[in-house]
Amino acid sequence: MDKQALCEKIITIYPEIGECGIDVRVDYDEDEKSLVVYLQRGNREVKHFLPDEDAEACMIGKQCVGLGIEIKQFKDYAHP
Image: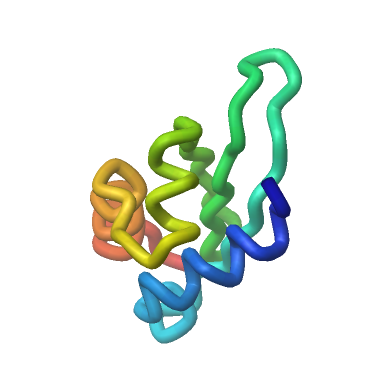
């Protein structure tokens, strides 16, 4: 899966990422054999492992439930 395309799709599905100053990037974790979404705001960062089925759902424009919860929590609790 194209990491950049997935990153752009996540930002499209969750536009509040940019509005609240959260940076997002996607990478592949070789040890876990999974895509990882990194959320960063100021000096705080979390990484969310994104199962293939969630990544595929994101790519067709559906919300990724686990990632959405992570973004909400990060938005509410991460302070720059």
